[in-house]
Amino acid sequence: MLGVPNLSGGVTASNEAGVQIIRLSSACPPSAVRPHIQEGYLLGEYPELSGFEQKEFYQPYEIDFGLRLVAKFGFDPQSFWKRDTFPMVKKRELYPPPDVDPLFKLTLEVKQNLESTTL
Image (cartoon, one colour):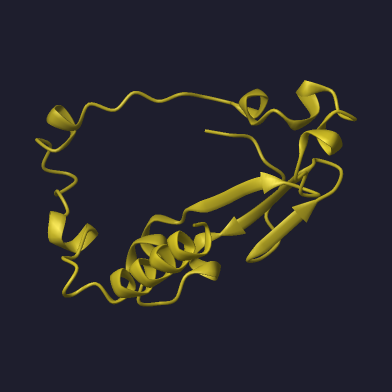
C-alpha cells in the first residue's frame, strides 16, 4: 500500500507531492470491466521527468516511490479461497478469452504498431 495525496477526480496531479494519480476506471472504456471493479490506479511522477538530466536536480527521496510504502500485506490464496465468506471469481470473468475480450484486438493493434515503429 502506497501513501498518496487525496484524490480529486479521475486524474489528480499534485506538484507539492510530486505525483500524478490516474483512476483506471476513468482511463479505460466501460468494456474493460476489471479496472472498474477493482478500483485500480496508475501512479507517476509529476511533473513528468523524462530523463536523467531532469532527475539529477532532485534528491532520491523526492522521486522514489519506494519511500511512499505504508504497508505490505501477505496473501495466501490457498486458504483465502477456502472460506465461504468470499467466493472465488471465475478465471473467465477476470481474463476473458481473446475471442470474447473487446480490448484484446485493440491492445494487439497497439502492440503491433509500436513494434513496427521501433524497427
